[in-house]
Image (cartoon, rainbow, N blue to C red):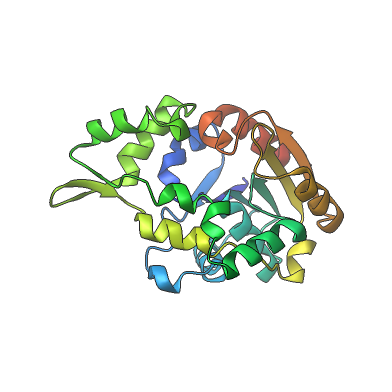
Length: 256
């Protein structure tokens, strides 16, 4: 029996993906529900976050596949590069794995303190993070562009598991300031060992975050990772969970 260790996207606790896990129920799935829970916003860096994955991967003699969406994809790569025998292979779902050209743009903007312009942090700064009830939150989120194509169950799970009760109602489980801190620490250098990790990468072909230059760079540098387009946008694992599960299962079954 194969095992899956899943790492979530920034701002979306792993339980948001329960509908995806439902379609993968034949596998043993483990996760870190919320990365960076015990790390202060000012101390966040992606190297520390990848260590959380290493610490939480189950000890077993069975094959383990590291699966990660967005942030979770890059962290899974980092973890696999540090512990080459930990995963049989990795399955990356639209990771922000950028070419030198794009990373150089980010470096320059970061020096000018303008990097929020280029990252989702600019949208996170405007994110509403408090609600009177989960019903109010659900009605609010379903009107937003980010969530408009979410599977209804995934959206409900985001409300159910992405909010926690406070004294005045409910707030986001992953605080906005922590979400922003993670975006602002986007990697602009990759350790050489990352290039030796084997697996597959699916990128959202609609409104892609991975440009053609990124895909060419990945192809030329990650020789052991096969690249596939996925008919969706960056959030395809939460918008098309069944198709995403089929992609993951195909890789596990045939070791593509």
